[in-house]
Image (cartoon, rainbow, N blue to C red; front, top):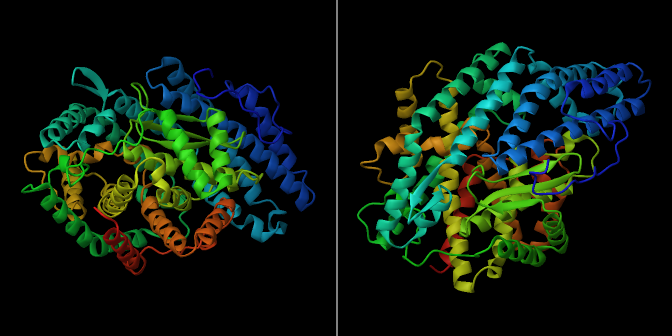
Length: 578
């Protein structure tokens, strides 16, 4: 597809099962490969043959996944391009519904295969338990519902990617407007915040309608699979073997007791420094001493070069990998109209190469984002040699350790972007954000989703009231007086609620892992980085607690873990000059 920012990339391993010239546009071209795998499964006479069968299945899965990923990348890079939208929706509507029952059939064959128990247990333990879940949850009647769910998600992305405002004589995206929330002039910040907020509120009904359609679909999907609510279904589908909804509630409580007191202290100090009676929503991103906003770069090429310089200071191997991504055009980083919001790293499963998408506009958050997504990319590259498709990616809880650790490790070398005082200022702002935004916002979004999916039949007003209660618990001392409608609909901006239900607590769990990696680095940089890379190289081949352990962390997220880490962050903040 010529809309892709990168050129054609060959498979990492030459295809041995999938034809080189296979056209993915028609199901009739793909079906014979599933037929062949089903037929061959009965011919496996020893464990080695079954393992070869698994590798061929992985090759087909990788080829299909890369095709979908390429179409998704083209669509998110060009949400206003009808050709890209049509190609993506064709795959979602015509190909995926056909592949899902056939993938289920293969999983079913494998789960009940007489030779499965003879495979090395250590090698296949994780793969086997996840395969069993796929077999357990699959329902043919859910395939069209999941197709509709994906289409609604695309509608949300298209809508949010299209939103612009007129400001200072030019049309600007909502992401571009975020720059003005860092302006020292309070009136400018308020004006920018109001423009963006009111623009979103203009789409309130459309956003609510999309979400309510998604909610109805998800409840039906869970019911079809034999679950009383979507939350319990989602936990099973996400293969959360190592923690429960009750553990999430303990995380929420730990944030309330261990993090929120520090949040309120920092907010009180911010209010005092700004010299305002109360903190308003447009007072959160500005420098509290009213210094001009940090502007780390003007052009995206500068950001790429300086990020690569950070990686050279950190590890020559990582720098080389990042440079190669840039050379292969696997980076689409600049914000523009018609580009989907947010940032992501996606792996081209057959080329086994990562692609980074983001919306850089020249603010410090862009530096944090490129470090974050590069961490994901390094993870994908570290695990790329495993020929079992399921092991080339890890559970999100550990994937985000890879990315969030890289933010903290890379922050040691921010002098590539700034002079020393500005670098310290950026480091301080990042740590404050971990405390005042990341943990509280994750707890808010996660608790809200638990409420949504365990309260079937709730009204919009009840949903808004629940949201406001969670904002009250985790929002600290920000004054929304006069903007209650905006506060009640503030969750509309969080795409995970729409696209990836229950995928958000992972960031909180992972942030705790990343803080532990950083703590280790403060004691021994070389060992901490070696542990980090060792954890990444395992991909998804081991259970979560073992992945954390390999990276030098504990998989535990109650107050006994959060409390000491928050004290460490407080000490670091105290050591950094304002």
